[in-house]
Length: 342
Image 1 (cartoon, rainbow, N blue to C red):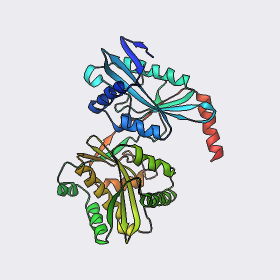
Image 2 (tube, one colour):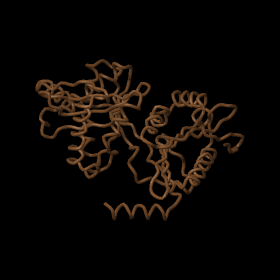
Image 3 (tube, rainbow, N blue to C red):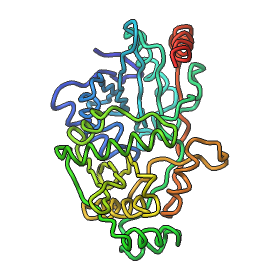
Image 4 (tube, rainbow, N blue to C red):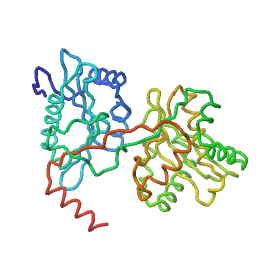
């Protein structure tokens, strides 16, 4: 399948050699990221999602790419998602915004054929809204702000740049005898303990947790994933799932026991996760999401933001996620249906 755009060829990648070239492109791209990687593709496919990779090429060199996650919903409809993408070579080859928009137009047409009613995208530097179809997305799938900690430093230096309260709480957890251990997805006891904590945390903090099979797939099918648990007197008090990609470690899912909150286990758990990533060769540790600066205490991420800020690091901001609604009436009807059901 191909489509001519100013002497560029647009096509989907499927062969082993194509995917190898794509992986190299993402790994070496200045904005290459976990969510546009082949590792993420395999993980999403294990969850039952269809994943497609579109690229533009010039002289057999990739000049732009978009890895799309496709979710099926009722009546054969779908949503398309391009997390932290598309990627393009404008940093290197000055790919024009006009060409980027035309590349997206091709993907929009493909989405329409798939009965897609909404497509979401979050390119690291946002596209100029030259296409009137693009608008800000109300979702929070890819957060606009995060905190990244430099773990290439010595352990003492990493601790020194933390807020004094974080250092104190790490020591408190150790003084209380909290112990952190690493587990695999095959450790059913540890996984059951984590899921119990996730269920409790979701009920306490008012968010919807995922099915247990989702966390199992994260550990089994996402290369670079890791699983840490904090224990006190052989009882689980906190758990963490993370992943490493290139030189970057991510805190992805976490949960803790409110009953044992005085033990300060989540602080020790984060510290051990940083050390785990550092030992594996990572130079940065991403706490994966905080409330954007200027938002109030009513922001759903406000509570966790206060916790994460205590670890120091640098705030990194991203453009807001964008979207295009391909079937406006269908989207409104589905949103109305969800409200009625809920």
